[in-house]
Amino acid sequence: MITGTILTVGEILVEIMASERGEGFREAQPLRGPFPSGAPAIFIDQVGKLGHPAAIVSAVGDDDFGRLNLDRLAADGVDTGAVAVLKGHATGSAFVRYRPDGARDFVFNIRHSASGCIAPTDAAHAAIEACGHLHIMGSSLSIPAMAEWMAQAAASVGARGGKVSFDPNIRKEILDDPRARHALETVLGHTDLFLPSGDELLMLSGQAGVEAAVAHLIGQGIAEIVLKCGADGAIHYDRGGATRSPGFAVTEVDPTGAGDCFGATFVVCRRRGMAVGEALRYANAAGALAVGAMGPMEGASTFAELDAFLTARPH
Ligand code: ATP
Ligand code: MG
Image (cartoon, rainbow, N blue to C red; front, side):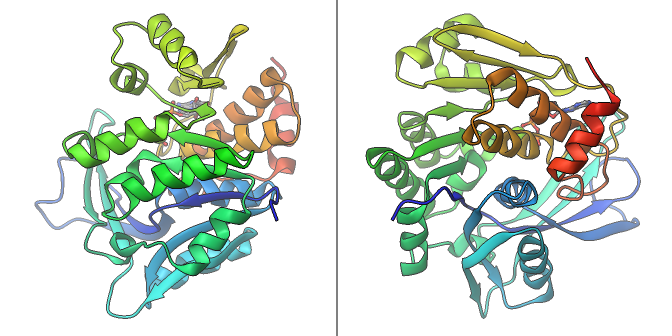
């Protein structure tokens, strides 16, 4: 049976943040965390908070970092039944420190953590077969089993009438890995809604300018593209043209997770039949609320919170 459930597959991590800005981690310093994290986990938590059926396929260790995440996801309405709890592996982690200019330095432990062992279990297959919408994160495609598996999953969800969204969320390590790069391109071939930010649109389309990149991807069969533009908001493209939606002026406390909350909100709003302009407005509000909170998943919002934010800020 196909349900309306939005599903994602990918890493669950804890994030531990330096509380002072500076260059990396080569000195002792105050840290804050653990916070629940991982781009797919943030995305699906935002879907759950909006009250939409949500599920994640992933893996955590049998440790407190895993329990912290599973408890949060369950509390926010996400089905974690297809998250494997692996004895003998630690939950993945990301240590992050902001540099004085706002750029981020990360130390990731993903590949050798429980997240590096995400595998096509029976529960995972059942979740993929049941979902109405599959969201894929590029950051997950460097996990060993994921690249070919997600390309197949995207094809099978599409073949039975489900939808696929794809946020390339490119990190340099992914582009350096030929298998993951090939998987990015294959997944793109099965994508209905593409959610790049910054240079990702040009990097993945191989085109020199935004207009050429959009025309190229829409010509390849991608129905909708939403280009996330940070504080400037977002631009939606389809065969009918472009729709711009400005960002909201807020104080940025911590940008991590904004793109994930934005994407989740846009997908939920569109699945609920909202017009593009209205869905963009909600998604920009979700992104703005996400950057206003310290911690990657701490700024995820309910519809009541988004409505309160939007009522206070009519465009
Ligand atoms: P991430 O760092 O989570 O990967 P991203 O690069 O995918 O983010 P961004 O374009 O940085 O995506 O942010 C996504 C959305 O969040 C934007 O389209 C906008 O709506 C909102 N947003 C991001 N930064 C700000 C900001 N400083 N002020 C207001 N809104 C913001
Ligand atoms: Mg992103």
